[in-house]
Length: 426
Image (cartoon, rainbow, N blue to C red; front, top):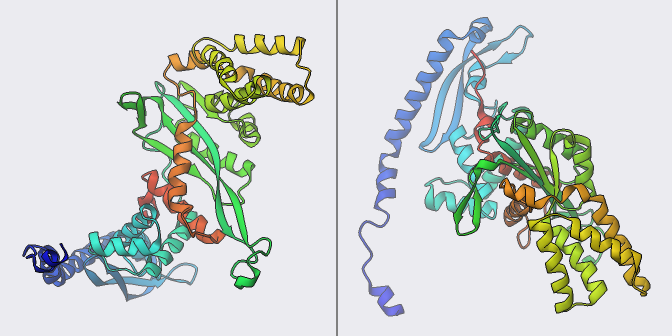
């Protein structure tokens, strides 16, 4: 087989497309430079900002584009505050010392978000996008775009925002990511030092219109249009709640005819709900999370076996298709005649308190009849997708590096990456 591979003739078209592109690249670069200069000249001719500056002079702006380096001549001058200013840069959405064109930066941002590492982003850029950039260039671009993201806020409303006839679904959860601790980078002899690696919870959420949840095959469903929220390490539950509420408003929180907030039993989640969403939405306890607590009680009462499984299965069926009445009736009977084992009694008291605290969050049958998801699988899927990029083998992040890429990933997933290059008014 190896001999055949060595002697086999390769198609003469392999690499021909890229070779042809490289041959025409200089012509394309010159044509693009001419067109871009025309855009600048046309805008400057009618711009009030350009008319108001004094001591005008031309400034050469070099940008690395998909076709090569182009040079644009833009007017700069002194504004009313006595500072040198180049209005055309703001109009083009370009930072003062930006090296790459917005299109190239966008390509690098998408590749960084979609591939497993900056090195892979560089490799994929060269192999499939015909764009030669180093992994260091991709990394530094993400850092600069993160700074821009702090200044350029997303659009006022989301593309998939809910309207008066829509039902809005919100799900939230958290997952852990590895960060470098204060003892990171010490010698191998000190690998067991404390605080070498820090695990941080990354709070995340997903929002979508109920009409965007479609059945794609059998019982499998997929969300056709969603909006995600994810915040960096050390973001408090209070700050995450404020961010989530702000994004929910953009998603039509105040306009939707109904809003459902689905989550597991995390205390911080329910505090966010009570603080921000209790008056405008209906809370639902994740059915799978509830079943875990019920199985824990069943194992304590009947042991880990078929009897416990059957006991739990009957109650879960009643919960899912009818009402929680059977569950609370069973709990009342157990409390009237409690088991003799102290450990089982403690489990019963703990689980009873848990179920009672969520008595108003278990109307699964009514919600399922409306098509509302009774589980938080969508946000679990989101957490898995984020971990696939940010929690890979060997990845130990600095807080700054993690936060920068996470914010770019969120913009990319929400279809709002272009908001990083908004043009200023004339």
